[in-house]
Length: 398
Image (cartoon, rainbow, N blue to C red; front, top):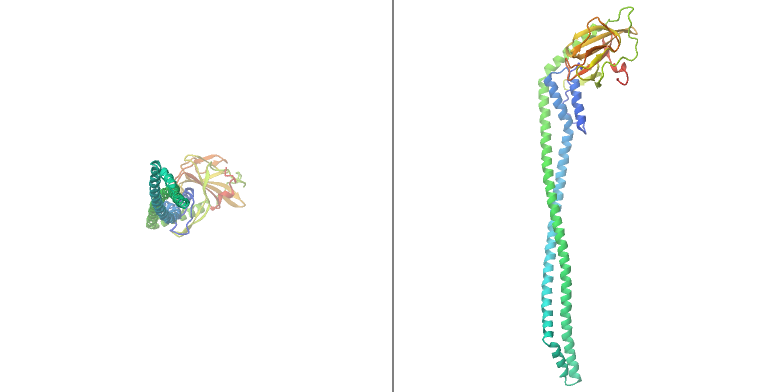
């Protein structure tokens, strides 16, 4: 049992930065362990405060990260939009040039069609007649030159048609590529815009979550402050109870001729797991130090509690925050009285003055007194003064 006030920490930017829910849960558990002597309201406030404080760094990181993601997404969306506009402009340009090339093809085809029609209608025979009708060599040469010029003109028209078709195909390919590029750029811009909107919504959620955490911490602090007088009163009562226990346990030892505890490892008093250590604890909110006078071992309610060594029952009953509390006297070690004590029991199975064997069942695990859950609070005391029980238990705690 923690005979202490709270460890209700005021908000601090230096709070631990948990990277997982497990660490946040451990922070809450630590607050609960130290708060055993606090009021229920203060304990609940501490749990909320510790949970909010533990979660705050992660929430702050999410806000910062989401704001950065929004900026990056908006920039990417704007860049993608500009690329899409440029690609669409390029497509429009290539589409216009393709249309112009198509017009030239049509014009060239019309002229070539006229040539073909003229040839079909006998223009070739007319050219032959033109040569036959020459009146002399000079006239023949002139007429041949005229025929050659006509044929070159016709060939240029054909070449122009072929070139126009080639140019049209090239411009068509360019326009098709530009169209695909524009469509892809527009799709990318749309996706980037969607991502930007999603990032903005995530940033808004992160901001609201951070505000909720901040409000929770502020409320927890208000409750803790309102409980200050009650918690400090319990703290003083716990200090007084500890002093009474120390005084009551001084001077006890087994009677002459009876088997005292001879030192060495104690019998493990319960089959459980260590949930809290022995030691001084400081509450930075209420500004008090208090000793957690034993080690806590979590176990199911009703789990058997065993005597750590042979001894005599010198205390068995209610002891304030300890709840149902039993102490066994084991004689003296180097002239100093040695006792073990067992707190928060759901049932005490021995009575005052009874002698018990090492390993004998003396009670059941519970959560009586100032306790936040089923566990055994186990103490080792020398002339009533508590010392760390882990120094006397098996190192395996088994």
